[in-house]
Length: 118
Image (tube, rainbow, N blue to C red; front, side):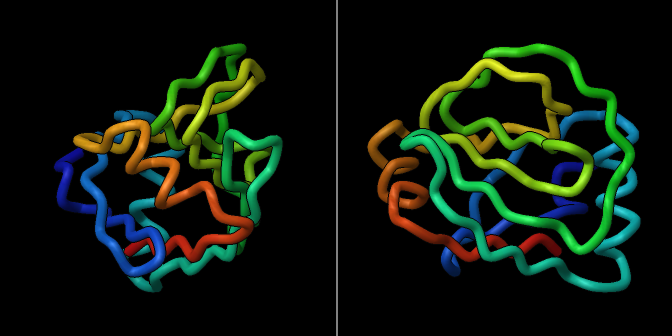
């Protein structure tokens, strides 16, 4: 998958993402070919933003410890963007590149965020 096929913006700021090469990302890319996704997320646990996707996507969950910048699929229908770390069973979608921990906290540390995927 070419990196430019899917773009992700947080509160209007486009971020560079290295997307995984898996069925979940392929399904997400196919969906956004026809319609962008806007997700209103809420901060959870002081380390992530979580929001519901418009439908369930293919998933292949594995136990992992996330890092700041990771983007994962949770329960097939929720997207999670990390500015901290957590251990849980997720499907990894990608990783936000080129952002420091401080920048991630500024983008994702508020009570809510607007995520646009297109």
